[in-house]
Length: 146
Image (cartoon, rainbow, N blue to C red; front, side, top):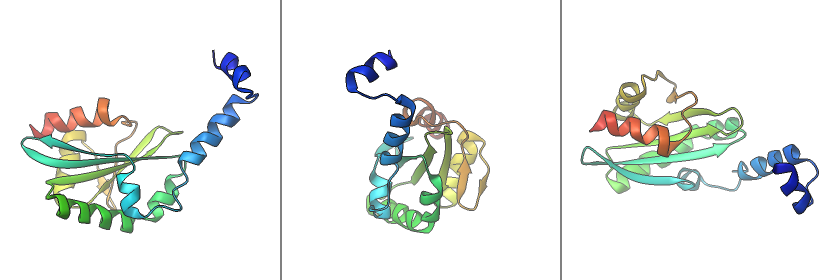
C-alpha cells in the first residue's frame, strides 16, 4: 500500500521521506518554552482536580532536554496561571518510542511514582514505551487519581 501511494505521490524512497517529515516536525528551534509546552497540550480533571498534560514529539530529545530548565519554568507558570493540581510534559522520541516526562515538583513526582511506578531522577521520569496520552497515560492517571 505504501509503495503504491508513494508512486502516486512521486516519492521513490518512503523511508527517507518519512524521516524528513519526522525531522520537520521535530524542529523546535523557533519556539519559546511556553510554545513547546502548548504544542500538544490538554487539561484533564482527575478526582475533581485539574491537571495539564502536554506531549512534545521529536526525533531529537536532546534539544528539548537542553531546554529543561526553561520548560520547567513554563510548566510552573502554567500551573500557577491555571491553578492546576499538577502538570506534566512528556518528551516522546517518535523513532525510539520512548517517553521521558518532566517532573515539576513533589506533587507531580508522587503521582508519577504511584501511577506508573516510575523512578524520578533529575526532574525526569522514564515512562518507557508509554507514548500514547489517550490510550496509556490518561487511563493510568485516572486510575491512580480517582
